[in-house]
Each structure stands twice: as structure tokens, then as C-alpha cells.
Image (cartoon, rainbow, N blue to C red; front, side, top):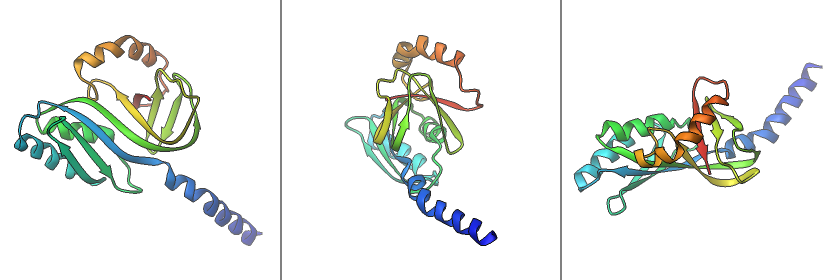
Length: 173
């Protein structure tokens, strides 16, 4: 009997492990307010590259943005990414993360758990998340003040429908 259970566990791991490995954050794009020179850009880059889940940082001073490539199979903290930019002395205009989904069904205000975090979707038009999709993070550390004003009412309503979790990220597509 024990051998049968062990065989079933191994079978399940073989079947489901590729799905778990596929679903993950791939990269992050950040718009950074205040970048004016190469030293500013380098300061942000050095602050970000210290995070252990970041593989590479590509800064673009012309468009005031950064593309962050993430390591495979590592827990990604969106808060730490935002804080690294803030610690370098800059503010964030937007923070978007590319995530590879595998058929996740969603709707507005639905909650989704991944790793140690909960994500609540706002203003959703896609009933199913399939493949590589761009998540736009909504919150004071992830958007400029002007952009936050546009989301204020919707964010307030969403917080009343919270996912009953300690840490919830609000995202849209």
C-alpha cells in the first residue's frame, strides 16, 4: 500500500511540477520619475541589482524607465522592487510585471494567490489569463500621484471587497 501511495505522489509531481514552474513572474517594467542623468540611472540600477531575485537591470534614460529581468524559480517581492527605486531617491510613475499564466479564470474584484501574496484584480475585461500577460500594479508606491487620482474611487471600493488577506496587491491588465 505504501508503495502505491508513493508511486501516486511521484506521478502527481511529474504531472504538476511543469505547471508550477511555468507560472511565474518573468520581468518588471518601471517608469521612474526624476531620472535626469546617467548617475541617476546608475544609482537606481545599483539599488535594484542588490535584490537577490533580480537577474539583470536594463535602464533607459531616454524614456525614464527600467526593464528588470528576474531569476527563474525565485520568489519576487514587488514591494522590494518599488522600495529599491524609492531608496535610490526617485519615485515610480508606473510598475508593470509580466507574468506567465496557465489558464487562470478571473473577473473584477476576484482574488488570486501566488507564492506568499494575494492579488485582487480591478477593471478586468479578460475572463481567463493565458500565457504571458502584463499586470499593472495599482497603489501609492506603484503609480504617480496623477495616475493614482484616476484609480482613487475604484481602489476605495475594492478595499471594501478585500480578499481577507494581510498583504493584497491591486492589479489590472
